[in-house]
Length: 131
Image (cartoon, rainbow, N blue to C red; front, top):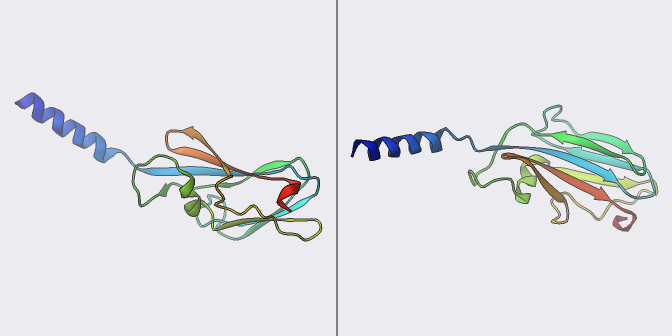
């Protein structure tokens, strides 16, 4: 009986000690033939909580967000595409002609890759077809 009680207590400690927070990086890739102006805002970016803008030449890619630890309401569910809403408020791209991309932040086509147990990376790839 003592062994079972000890095992139950140990398992309880392990599960309560598990921190359910996630970290995400966000990359943007310009696969179009034009220079793009990327604007984005994240409350959870390690470097800045202000709106940021950068210019991305054709063929370039860059990490734009590296998040703090993000606790999600669902608890320990693993990295998930729905967590994008906690990572950034918006990410938009505008081409040299002034047209805004049809690819929006949170779109299911954005690639999510698992990097580690509680770390993932989103990649938004902008192509000519997006404009």
